[in-house]
Length: 278
Image (cartoon, one colour):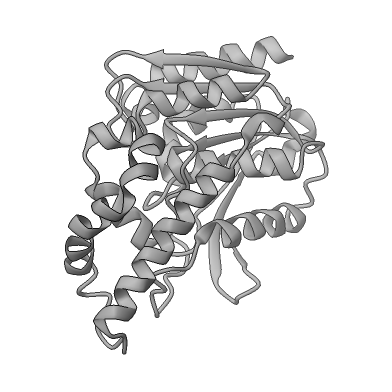
């Protein structure tokens, strides 16, 4: 199995499908998985796309077949590592052509957006699957978000911006229970833990308020699921409003894992989108 070493010395698993015949393909597509997932999540899309394209995917640190850090950092935001590791992988593989990006969920989709904003000349197109404008990229943020009821998620900015203190007062005890195993050996007082959790949630909200995807200029396909409880369709609708050259598709009878559960229709939308660009 192919691995490359990150700047921190970890071995990260990657796949470079059709890399040896890249000159015979119709282009390069990068796949970005979500939090607690892996590149294998895209197997339904890989089977279809590898007929014509070079496919590059990797398991982020702590995910899939990549190394698992011995010491878990509760508040480390993975986005910076993932973006840096992706840039290093592309250099390692000698990718010098423009590429398309397909990102899933609130991590893969958001990182696809950030790459499109920071490397606009490199990105040919962007496809966001069950994505949004929130970055759930560490343990604390993930537990906090998973504890929120659906009615808060669909109105996340309005509800949380006005009531975050009240929400945290109710949720922090449950976050601490969820973190119990991870806290073994950590010499933190209860007050320090509370401050750590509050700092991560408040900084996440500030990042959301400051985030502006309107600078994404590449053609963008946004696919949402009507039954997605994790990244509600309202998030995709908001992205569609803000990303100028975007197309929105909302699928009935599709949840957060639509790329796996409804792969036929997802693949059809992806192929149609890419073919029209060509």
